Length: 148
Image (tube, rainbow, N blue to C red):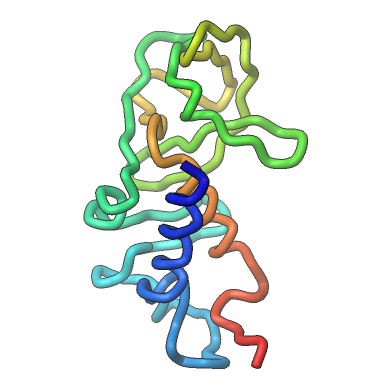
């Protein structure tokens, strides 16, 4: 499974205009996003939007949550970043990392609660690792830079 992530990340880094560019030294800016890019919009406050084609290619699937929680999700939905645990939420096409509390585990499922989730929000239940890679790239100061 890790080999799949590495290979997919390598392909993204070289083939998608959002993740890498043939324009060495090009400035990061609005031209990196749009209808023909994997990432169609980015905002430091709201998160990012991705094309349906990119989401499908990365195997990202979302599940709408129901009720007031706690919610049961596949364990694959969880993302660990340093000492925090969260999930990727999609709301009105914007995808953002949301902190959660894991309140239970049972095999391949988890129970979570979060003040930042509400009924109707969609949570990435597969492909969350690729959303993390995308977010890290978008928030990096070294995007589109070369070491040579």
